[in-house]
Length: 120
Image 1 (cartoon, rainbow, N blue to C red):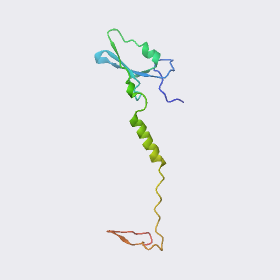
Image 2 (tube, helix red, strand yellow; image 1 turned 135 degrees about the horizontal axis):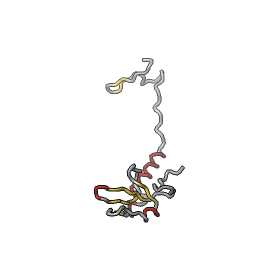
Image 3 (cartoon, helix red, strand yellow; image 1 turned 45 degrees about the vertical axis):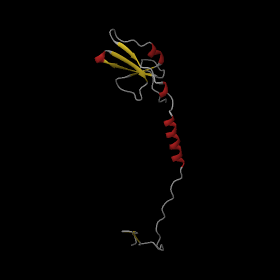
Image 4 (cartoon, one colour; image 1 turned 90 degrees about the horizontal axis):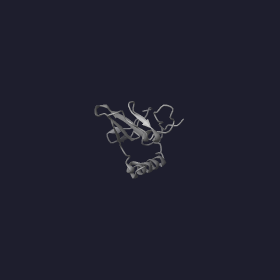
């Protein structure tokens, strides 16, 4: 199953590329780049339905062009990905050994604390 959002128009299975919202107070339909999250009162539209969009009589259609710099990964995104890969590749820290009965530090004082084991 694909996680890509589909066009909201009935019987259209094309992938959505724009999001349509209405500003009723201003009688404006706003068509912009695909929103990050699907909103309940917004409509995701494919390219053909976005191009053929019309609004009710007396309404204005505001078409927001996508920011060309915002498309694709930025250098910050690539640096964050590289940091995540480096972090995942680091070896796990060695486990701390448990004190044995013949351990000379067993029951020793360390500063204001004393190490106790269940047999103390």
